[in-house]
Image 1 (cartoon, helix red, strand yellow):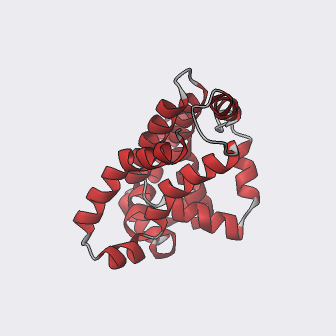
Image 2 (cartoon, helix red, strand yellow; image 1 turned 30 degrees about the horizontal axis):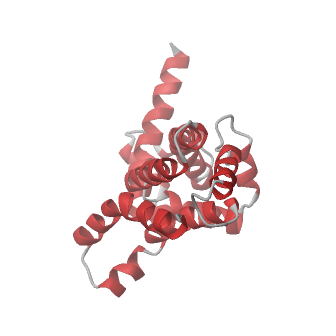
Image 3 (cartoon, one colour; image 1 turned 180 degrees about the vertical axis):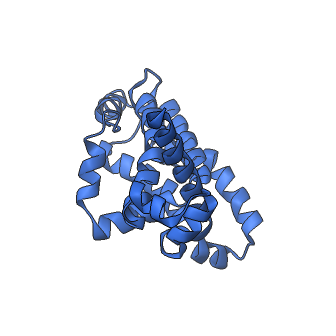
Length: 203
């Protein structure tokens, strides 16, 4: 019974923290606010998670554990290269739309705690691009796409997917749209990014 109660409390804390981090980001979130949202006292929150940083990492790992298997599946299935690019982009953008705090957290962690990436990399379902690299090289040999390093192609895909979330305030100002219009642009990028990438490499 105690184990079930503990698991339920942790789940409630993570749900509350996810919502607060979503609304206010890492810097704006307060532990007291998260405790109130989870309907527990602050002392109990600190019992489960000693700091806001540790709580944020737990929320991130929980979210990443949902994304990683999806990306791993896409990268390692038997679909052709173009279909793989389409599926990867759609899965990635759909996920980040639901978890918009994730990109900025990754950047923050890379700057303040590079070792956190190694923690993630040790997870069972951490995505591997090995099969993707083989498909890129095969497509080049068959004359389907122009010569390009698979690693460069993958970085291009990630960059085009992630920057609109990291640079949202700046991009909203530059393209002069409100939040609702910008959200529509992000939704459309599920297909626009893959079309752009594919058209840039295919022969």
